[in-house]
Length: 478
Ligand code: NAD
Image (cartoon, rainbow, N blue to C red; front, side):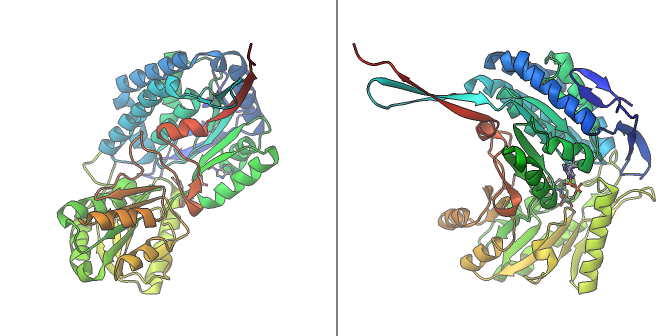
C-alpha cells in the first residue's frame, strides 16, 4: 500500500508497516494506509524544503494561482468520484459528501484567484526614505488534519498555504483520508511541481508528533481536540515556530422571544445533525428565552424526531459516527447523561443498518442544568442541550459560560439586540438569523479561548501563512 507522497513519488513506509482503515457503516476493514514514522516525515520535510528553494517557491504568485485554479477544474471534473470515496470513507450520506466536494473545489478556486492579490504596503516615513512592507511565504508548513471533513479540511488548510508560496507537508487523519490521497493525485496531474505537496499517512503520536516537532518546519497548523492542540504547541515550542489551532467548540444557538421560529427551527436542527454532530462549529447548545422555552423546544423536538440516520448511500439525514473511538466516546457520554437522570426530550431514528456500524440517533436533552457536563463539554456527536435564560444579560452570561468560543447564532427580529449580542458573545464568527457552521470559504474563521487561535479562510488565512519583511531604503536628496 503506497499512500505516502514524498517528492512526487507514492511510497510505502520503509519498514512496510500499514494501518487498517474501517468502514464506519459496517465496522469492517476496507483498506490500508502506509504507516509513516519519523524517517518518512523527515524525507517529506526535506522534499518540501527543496521544492520551496528550487521550484514552488520560485514561481510567481500568478503562476501559483494558475496551478491552483487548474486543480479546481480537475476537482470539478472528478467531483462525483471524490464524493463517492469521501462518503464510503467517512460514512456521510452521499448528498452531503457532494456538498463537501463543491466546497473543496471552491477553496482551490478562491485561493487560485487570490494568490496574486495579497499585497504588501508602502509606509510614509521620513522624506528621504522609502519603506516597503513586503509579504513573503514562511517556507515549509505542516498541516495536521482530522477525520470529520477530510476533503474540506484539506482544501481549507493547504490552499492558502500554497497560494502564499509555502511548500507543505500534510498529515491527514489515519481514520479517514482516502479523498485526500485522491486530491493529491489530481494536484500532481494539474502540474504542481514535485515536493510542493507531500502527504504522510500515519498515527498522530508517531507521524503527527514527528511532523509537529520537526526542526525544519516554519509553521504548524492543526485542527482537532484541545488536548492534542496543547501537545502540538509543546512540540513546536523548541523550534519557536507559530501554530494555527482550531480546537472545536460548544457553540450556542440563542433564541429570543421575538425570533422568527419558522426560520430558526430548521436551521437549529441542521446545525446539530449536520455530519452527525461531528462538526467543530456544531450548534450544540440551544439557549432559549424562558417565555418561549416550551414552544421552541417543542418545535425543535418534533423536527429532531423526524431525523433519520442510516447507510451513506440511502436518502438519510445522518450517517454513522466516523471512527470507532469516537463512537465509544459518545456512548460513554450518553451513559453518563443517563446516569445523571437528565431528561431526554426527543430522539431521531436509526434506519435498518448492519450490526457492526457506528450509528447514534440525534438526541435533544433539557432543561440541562448549567453545571451539567452536557452544558459545557463538547460531545462531537448529535447531542443537543436545551437551556432556558431570562433576558439579554443572562443570555450573554450563558453563551460565554464555556471554555470555548468558536461560533454563535442569535435569533431575534430586534436590530439593536442583534448588534448588542453580536458584540458581547465571545466567538470567532457570529451569525444573525442564520447559521453557517463554519461559514463560506471567503469568511475568516477561527476560535477564541480554548477553541484555538489564528484565522483560516478568506484573506486572513493568507496573512497566517505568510510573514512581512520591512524594507527601509534611504535614497537621500540631491
Ligand atoms: P485528535 O485531535 O486526536 O486527532 C486529530 C489529528 O491529530 C489526526 O490527524 C491525528 O492523527 C493527529 N494527532 C493525534 N495526536 C497527535 C499528536 N500527539 N501529535 C500530532 N498529531 C496528532 O482527534 P481524535 O482523537 O480523533 O478525536 C478526539 C476529539 O477531538 C473528538 O472527540 C472531538 O472533540 C475533537 N475533534 C475535533 C475536530 C475539529 O474539527 N475541531 C475534529 C476531530 C476531532
